[in-house]
Image 1 (cartoon, helix red, strand yellow):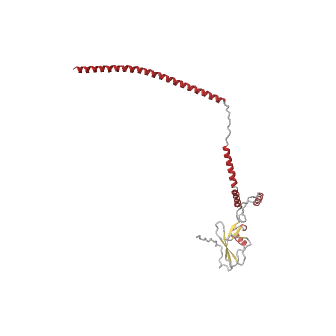
Image 2 (cartoon, helix red, strand yellow):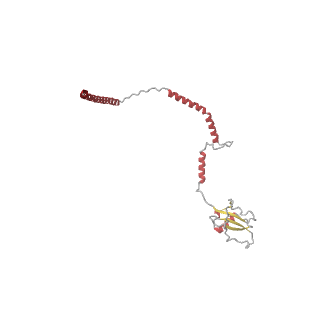
Image 3 (cartoon, helix red, strand yellow):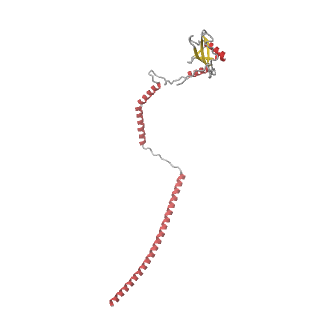
Length: 260
């Protein structure tokens, strides 16, 4: 809960009711810039107006009456001819004092007139933010109409799409005519022919070298086989003579045993 703070009132110049028998009414003026409120007394016989209040504040605080602006606690502005107290029964009134501030750089009216002319020249044609008699915005109504038209034209778009697809398929199935290409680079053809001839010469030379090596290897193999065959015949003859000698010695030994 917020605690209300009562303003500090300057009672230094306030006269007590015992000093004077005249009935008086009080005005509490809330000042600006954090200054303490001021309490003023006026007799009930005089109908005090805001102008009289301004003169009293001028005598006390030396504030020009033209610069003083008085407002009620509710924020209502009070002119000079308004009475401060509604009746004689009101004992006190609280008012807020504010100073008049000069603002604006001048020429505001001419600027408004110039802008008004520009705005009048630029008439708008977009009324989608407006509403119809049912309360719907024109933007929503127009979107609903466009959606209905789009759905209504959907079968036609499907038909056109299918026709384009069939046309593309038919064009793809048609056999395309062969294109004749003429090659006129004679230097390239000449290089190709020379390359072919070089390859043929290299292959023939390689084959001839291989055939010569095969023939030399076959002749050396034949000479080796002849030498081996003669050596085998010699060895086979010596082996047969040795076998005959051993057989004859065996026969002689068997004859000697039989004679004994």
